[in-house]
Length: 470
Image (cartoon, helix red, strand yellow):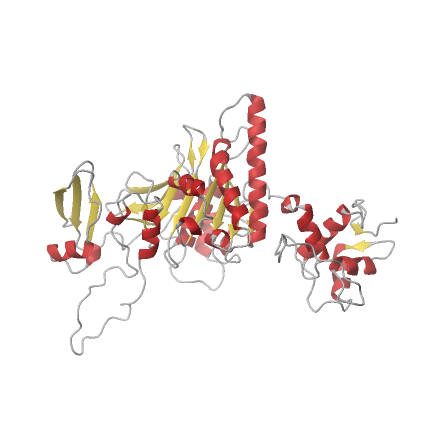
């Protein structure tokens, strides 16, 4: 039996709007602030519990059963401090709605591990996922091959979002023709999510695709959920200006599944001012190091080696859940220490099955202007890693005045009988007009643009790239 002291407090009408956690701990004569848990009660009540040690410190490993969606469309991510399950909704079977989600937290707070859990849950529950990992694929590397679409650049993310909005609009037209007002899972369409990790890179001020990204995410949140196309973003900040500057986007996230991991004081103020945290100032802080006792060390009193080690990864508040003011923590996802390669524990959770759904054809959502800009730029790259695809198309220079563009080099190399794409890549790398190898994405984009403007014929099924006879 755990020895827990519990105090039930009467509060002013409307509850406690702000409180000083350190002062409360001092009043209770508890040196370890993490042992004291404050929770806003119902009506004019608050509860303070004092534990012998922080109840969230020793979490078990995440298991597959936790991540299988239940009959109410939820998965179990962890537990509250009192042992109650922490659930996250991926689907609402009563309304047929996909969800809109946001996960906020500082660096090292546990966002990537939480993202892995959601991705595993989607794959194992038959949900199609299109993923953008904007940390060059490093945030959730094990997700490669585990989702229908995986992109790692901002431009690819825009193409992916265009594809998701297009799919939502297709479903709307189809359901209207059927006389259907809502989404019915797997009849005929699967539940689908766009998930963007490190979304602040895409939505922050001066990001190259900020306005379009905010518009597309807003559109998915506004119309996609009723046709089974959801959106989840994970970001380091929650301020309106760091989320594309869109009031509609902010309101959309406020009504979805919002999780707050360890935060900075500035982030908390921003979340409160933007209305994402209705009673944010009553949240108990989540320290980087849990269990540290603030005291003056005496002469020859040496701190332990792990005194500075962060140990609060995964501690959070589920702000739109049934207990928004109660601290919770995710189960342990994957290996505790970094691994030399892909984490085997995370790969085991994903399993070896082929992920549901088909990849979005990113090339189908490249505009004519973007195609021409890429084709005419010698260092332009295709959807695998574009440089500045939305910029103005460069003028084609005279060969004697400037280096040849990739398109010019292709026309100079191609023999009348044509050649295969791999042979063409090798010939471009050996033609002496560039110091860098041509990427496959660059070649594919350039060839598409050249076919579109008539410089190359359409493929004839032989696998050869041929010059236009005309």
